[in-house]
Length: 138
Figure 1 (spheres, rainbow, N blue to C red):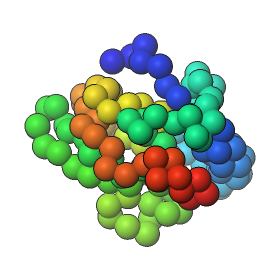
Figure 2 (spheres, rainbow, N blue to C red):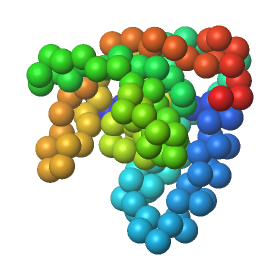
Figure 3 (cartoon, helix red, strand yellow):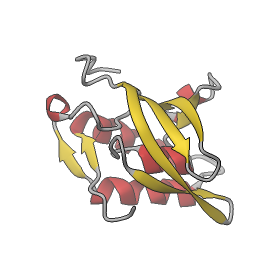
Figure 4 (cartoon, one colour):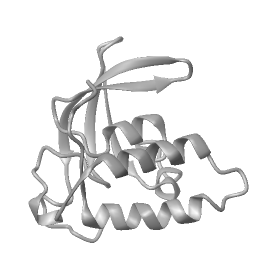
């Protein structure tokens, strides 16, 4: 579950760094989540958008995940926090689930924090990935 290599595109890295610079200035910054996302980005291998394999979760992906505790599937778009606020089918990259899925691959099993507990979640498949469709500026 851990020790899975994480990849992030140059474009996502650039936009996420810009976002994190602003997020640190928020009056009630979510420090723990910001630090968690920063750590994930630091550990990730950075690749060009055109090199992103279709099974990689990037920003603005539509992802299907399975909660392995309940065996329930759910679909969501991985979004920036402002975009995530505009729809119930969006998960913010600045959330425990969003941080875990970013840079992961179809088939990966992740441990997602849920309060004091962690729950196992598997990425079932990617329903849409911008890079696969050559939508490089989403």
